[in-house]
Picture 1 (spheres, rainbow, N blue to C red):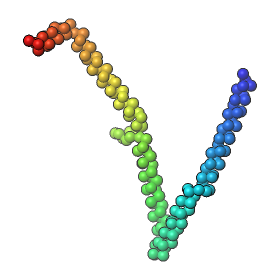
Picture 2 (spheres, helix red, strand yellow; picture 1 turned 30 degrees about the vertical axis):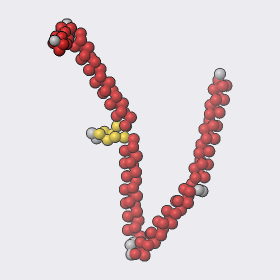
Picture 3 (tube, rainbow, N blue to C red; picture 1 turned 135 degrees about the vertical axis):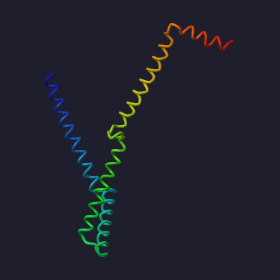
Picture 4 (cartoon, rainbow, N blue to C red; picture 1 turned 90 degrees about the vertical axis):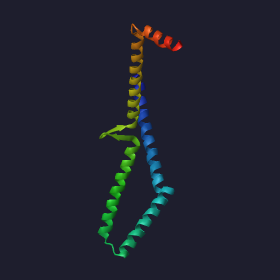
Length: 142
């Protein structure tokens, strides 16, 4: 039994190591060749050309860097807001996952149905419920 556990853990360790190595190789391949690299190089060329154009237009290097830094901070904040908006709902200053909101709504509906059923059952169990039903429906028939 102990031997089996040891070999299982050893096999699992080597499988994790092999899987992580494959993931690193895929990431390395994606970041060194293909459409992603071509697009990144194109964006870098466009950014370099725009920077040269702004320098020729009379802007200083520090002003360009400050503007780029400011825009990158705004862009990062907008991405974070977008990601949080996908997963969370902000209500009454508390961030609650959408799944929990759906579960809370389900629980509220279940409690509402339980209260309604209890209300109906209590009315049916009342000692005068039969007389009330007879009065209500007999009066409608005559």
